[in-house]
Length: 327
Image (tube, rainbow, N blue to C red; front, top):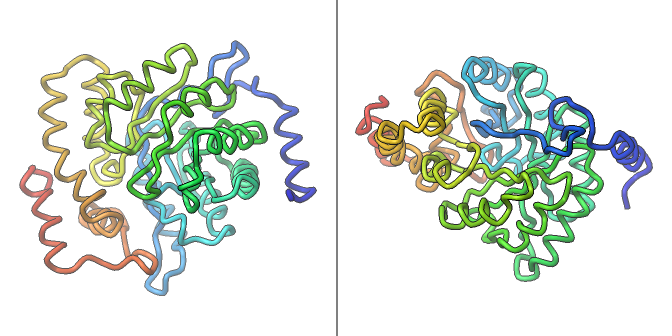
């Protein structure tokens, strides 16, 4: 059961309602908070002894903060959140909140396997500065994660969360796509403001945008590789791993799409596809962190069991960037 302190925080959050016109809250006119824009999913730096390196985290945030991002995602997949303790997850959120520019949104990944644990983590992340909670689908018992089960899970989390909730579907990691019918039902909840879809199926993204168009529901593309296509179908932004190294270029692609400069957007999108694949599906977080080292950020090691790239993999990674003119 939720502890008395957590329940007290929940009640305080609910008593405030959803009418505060501050970061992360829906407005009194019933319009949900605007989450449109580009977000880098911040990596978690580690020392050589696998401790969280909060100093390097702050340095990365100060550099990323000079770019025109809408905000930052912390404790997403690229943050290695499954490898962190609960206290580390909260300390990382707190550190990012203090280091990032005050006018940016902080979306914090609060998903856990159980509904109870997710509620507790969401409340705790709100207390340390998160503006919204990005909640990944529970997946360990994926065979029983029906639409009904997921609707119940997300509804309970959103009911008890003092901050807005963003749904998070990342089938490459969970083996589970949040069903469209569940998304449509959940879009009607006043404290569920949108979704990050990392599946890469742009027809699905277009369908979700279409079926939730009356709910003020906002869809964020989960990767730079299909960002242009997602904008064309009505997405409002993206959470893009590639933005950790090519942030200016990803933001430029956003501007080209929003201003209707589709020919230039297409040319830029083409040059981002291979680098994006390299730091996501092909080489994953080790590839992203290695690339961050090349581009003046601190990538550093991953936490075990993730391993560093082999020399051959590192060379292939470099080629994906050099062949497109980025290195």
